[in-house]
Image (tube, each protein chain N blue to C red):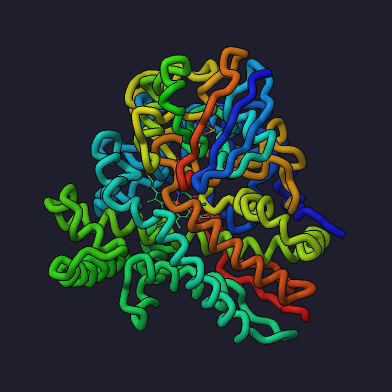
Length: 107
Length: 422
Ligand code: HEM
Ligand code: FES
């Protein structure tokens, strides 16, 4: 059960005990973390689960994948090299301690 | 008692027994009679990827299941919305120069990379700071409007509530001269019509009115170009480096997207709100007792209404999809109206449920690169509307059968005779 920390745009931390094998979007939505809506159900189609992966974690989580994930991210506000769609991050035990920051607005 | 509306009995029978191949869910009379449910239900079950050979618009594929719609909507490489390949609405005359229609290209009808450039030029209008500014404006206008409505008397909700509120919002987004704002409503209405449906008598009349629209906005744009950049859509277009070479045709196309995209849609959600409040008084009471339910009620009413019945794509190569052979050039219609009633994904899909779990999971705003740009603004308008409805009234009653928009695209109402109860 990796512990994932979601940090809202105003700096509030939400720590979630996530199940391995689900996505970082599902973990957030099922624990009602505000700021991650997951409107499309996790198929990289809505962009409402945009997160910035803490730079110290980027190597292990990896950058956004080319194709639909990158295309959706291109349409979101505040895209950076650390941007990912949380629904495309599959959680594993190795992610224990992962820090994900959220942008001010999701649409 | 909460009671879902039942489709007309003769249609239930006809939908069940007619040959599958003859089903045409684009038939506008079905929308006027609110008779689509049994046809979509049969298609979802027996022919989820269905070819209709003959319609007013020629042959077209219907995609009716939730997940199939998501699959098409996110596959813009094979299913294009670009105006050079077709259109993003079933009726080519709405936005293209065919029959009597005129060309009004816009980024909902463009593939990347042009789509992305155009979308980026206007998307700052939805930045958090702007939404915050809009919220207080929306609230004070909504309060003023409800203050002026009579209790216990009947009036047309569409004309007295939905149209004024959405037109004021649109005027604000465009920073449009407030006293002329009724013209916006008119322009919005004539884009999605053809002659013969009560709004215009001829194609020439439609074209002439759209040219008036263009002329009016060209003057506004010239004025804004000389002023410093401001947070309104016309200033953004006037100052955006990417939009400098815009031809009059491109400019009209962009205007039409912004006017119709933000107007008819939110209008239908507001009208649908009155219908939902009337048909589901228990849900209304539930939300009145617990305003926290607005978090699910707002997306739920947008799902339940589904203001845009369909979006269309055009196959740009031969594709096998769920066992059907879709040919290059075929029209492919994603019926959001059906996907939002897919019982395999959404429980009790016909019902409006204020505290529905997963209420945000619906198709009304589309998916993929063309997903609605204005969804947060639309939700905010609907939230404020419901705050006032719940705060003021014990019951919102619709006293007569509503009159519906004769359209297979705009899923909305013309007349809802309503009575408010303190
Ligand atoms: C409840 C209200 C609304 C509904 C149901 C709605 C629905 C939609 C749908 C279905 C699409 C196409 C999605 C697709 O093809 O996948 C769309 C796109 C769009 N909408 Fe909305 N809309 C609403 C409100 C608004 C508002 C308030 C605006 C603000 C001006 C707006 C502006 C746009 C724009 C600009 C696009 C094109 C996006 C693109 O192609 O990238 N909409 N909308
Ligand atoms: S949930 Fe829609 S993009 Fe991640």
